[in-house]
Length: 81
Image 1 (cartoon, helix red, strand yellow):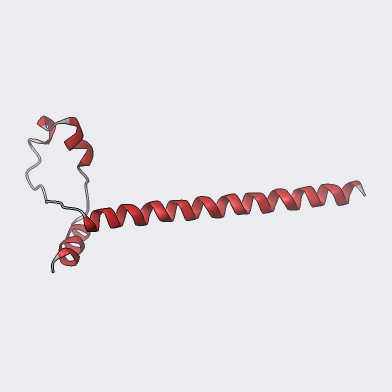
Image 2 (cartoon, rainbow, N blue to C red; image 1 turned 120 degrees about the horizontal axis):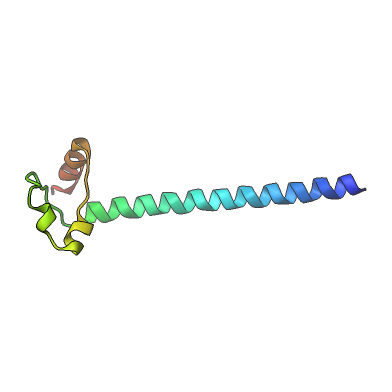
């Protein structure tokens, strides 16, 4: 009887962990999609000369994102009408 109770408790705990892991995965995926859509829908410009970035205001530096060349190309092609 004690083993059955322990097994049931472990089963419930595993189910709870699985649900929590699934929710975390879903939340992370939603965050990634939201960030991607924000980039797609927003205004942006490519900064090639980064020497003056240090002199920018703090908020402007926060908004700065680094991307690979292929990401920039993909954004430029999707935002053209």
